Image 1 (cartoon, rainbow, N blue to C red):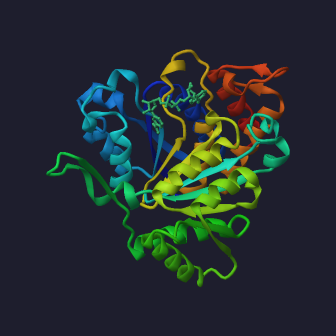
Image 2: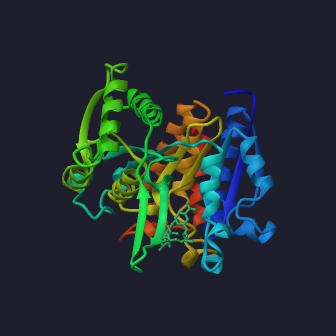
Image 3: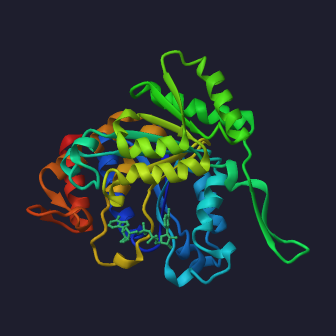
Length: 362
Ligand code: NAD
């Protein structure tokens, strides 16, 4: 990690500013205890960007993101912007950031904390110890392929088209990300496709198999996406790293994350370019904004991922994760994960508990 690093904070909308405020406390503890120089710059994005400049991704915000080593995002969106033209909607800022920062790999851990194993809709014995990392391709596939659109045919009927496209180099680079992260975990990768039906994912399977030849330590399995969806519910602990396409990853990572029981607990990392972007998987939760009841732990755990993937400081990542675990073990819960007999705390208090314990741990 170099002496001084620049981190752009993009609080966004709804509960975004609330959870980023707590994440900032964590970053400041790391900075003061480890004597690092972390320059934090806060910029508007999403609905806040639109209100400030008329654009969801203001030029100055994009420039700050591009000039920084890492970006930490809260969440964007809200009902007050839902009637804007598609190009001006807050969510457009996410696509703009991903594509301009070259973030082709999305890493989404679905890890269950022991103290929350009863929060899952699955039986505790099925999910106990669950620790899955979904590696999703983020800038290609059917979400970007051309041709796309809806056309009206001469007989007046309509026809909708989207196109699934992957080049061998796009597949190879995301496979390498999955194999590299698997080397630091249990050395197991499941590559998910639909090679029995879609030629494009037949190519996916071929290129992943070819790339795997350079990773002899990794145990590689291929699985069809429909089977994977079923296996995630039947026996999720068989998975360690799941490697998959943009659309399959979108769906499977939501499914995997919900095995852990709470959307307020799950971080994510988008990497691939020189600047990584880190964010909780939840949205701006307008229904609870401004009430000090949002769970900040997903964003705090995203700070951990930032130190691991952008700054190669796995020790800081592990310390943050252990402190979150310890605070949960002591029975503290925000409203979304509250159960009988536990101690209810707000967003600010949860941030204080984690930052105070981290301060004594580092
Ligand atoms: P959401 O994730 O914002 O909320 C879903 C439910 O989960 C709500 O009941 C909410 O109160 C709860 N929730 C979410 N995060 C929580 C937290 N940290 N603590 C406690 N409870 C939490 O999804 P939604 O309601 O479908 O979307 C709301 C807005 O967020 C929309 O404008 C949507 O487009 C946007 N969105 C943004 C992102 C992003 O910025 N990455 C992602 C998803 C949705």
